[in-house]
Amino acid sequence: MIKKILIAFFCVTAHGLFAQNGTISPYSSFGIGDYRDNGTVDNQMMGGISMYGDSIHINLSNPAAYSKLRLTAYTAGLSHKEYRLKDWENEQNTSVTNLDYLSIGFPLAENLGFGFGLMPYSSVGYSLSDTSLTPGGSEVTNFFDGGGGVNQLYASIGYELIRNLSIGVTANFNFGTLEYERVQSVEGVQFGTLDTRESRINGYDFNYALNYTPTIKDKYTLYTSVLVNTQGNLVSKNTQTLGSFSIANGNNIEVVDVDLDASNLRNTEIKVPTRTTLGLGFGENKKWFLGAEYSFQQMSNFENSFLALDNVTYNDANTYAFGGYWIPDYRSLSGYYKRITYRAGLRYDVTGLTVNNKEINNFGITFGLGLPLGANFSNLNLGFELGRRGTTDANLIEESYFKINVGLSLNDKWFMKKRIN
Image (cartoon, rainbow, N blue to C red):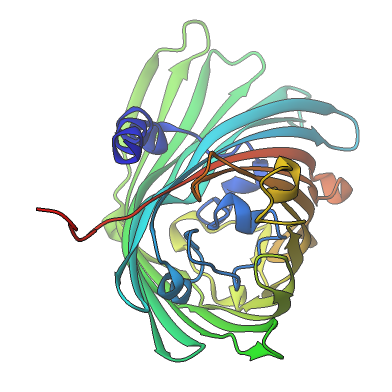
């Protein structure tokens, strides 16, 4: 029954994963867009830390955690994000809803687990305008629009080499299309100009993980992890058109394809630098856990020559994340609230993106609940995040956001041996 539910859900929602604009942030116009959270709701609500894994949940960020799976797990996640965007004189409210991931994981043998799935990697989605005056006093208006994104199809495997020491690897295939358009009109001029660019992207990268989780005093567990997401060398096939259009009716007057071969921009490479994450945590199994992670990435080596901008630079990035959970009594039969998992965390991202000489950083506070479903190990995970990114200085935009996450984690047992013929 669980498998039928998930297959039906996949058929209804998978198309939306490719069609959606996963963000409405003006900062998604840089690089290859906004990088999406790559963890399940239960990990995201602990500040996004990825070191923790158990026998019934999929950990999308840490392939070594698949070695702990004892049941087949199906998981899917949705999110709704409310934005408040403001600059030094204006403010606007808007929102976006997304499918965040679809995944399945299962044990292949004792201490060996495998999983695969589909999720967004980055998203572009913005609509901006600005006005200025020509030397003659005429008003010039520029409109900027962008959409699309990069999706990720992945397969992971994790194995416990020796007691408490697990390794894992994930192979990611990234693919998608990014679209950018700039339209300019001048007061009193009957024709406007347009510049449209498109990048079709694909490429591979790999995640490697090492987890060491020794037991202390037969009661507590020390969690340590090292995660390495190797440099993503993405191939971008680019097109660009320039033209003019009628201000009166919006019809194109003349549109020509730009010869990108002459400037060696028809096929370019986008380099997303290696990201390394170190984690340390402590807890009592099925009762409580606290952990912290530090990630670093040489974003100063990021390259996207087709969309290079004069007012944008990239510096080295790093992230600080803290979080944990608490379960009052997971065995309780009389009190449902005692079996709920309570999660909370916070994170601070130095993104490495610098616009108009101002760093664009992000701070978020997360919290959520894991609600048991029935008498089995399935659960519904609810999460909430409050955060802020950017600044109103240097004619930039500050984003304040409130995010709601809903994740469904279902469990089943495959390969059961028949006891009676």
